[in-house]
Image 1 (cartoon, helix red, strand yellow):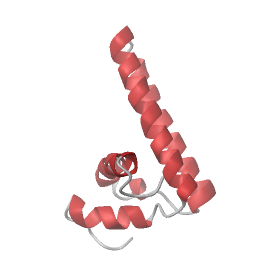
Image 2 (cartoon, rainbow, N blue to C red; image 1 turned 135 degrees about the horizontal axis):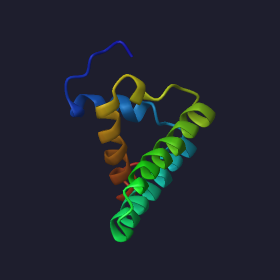
Image 3 (spheres, rainbow, N blue to C red; image 1 turned 180 degrees about the vertical axis):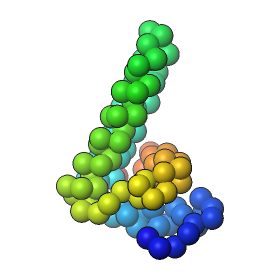
Image 4 (tube, helix red, strand yellow; image 1 turned 90 degrees about the vertical axis):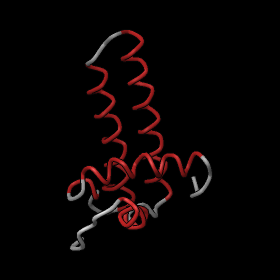
Length: 101
């Protein structure tokens, strides 16, 4: 990862190349979905600590996917903001079947 990405548009193809393993993508999707549910729960019961739980769950699922199944280092270590945004782009693309579940 020596290239410096200057836009989300140029980073997203690289991001997808780091998520070729189907189990890794599924773990990302499930982790993101559970994070959304935690955030909604935090709003419903006014429990701000669930925001932290949402982040932990999201990253835990993603990192298990990378270290155990994809066998690579998450791009979030070098590109935290782009990676976070691309997590949601990939979530959308899986949801709308633009990339395989």
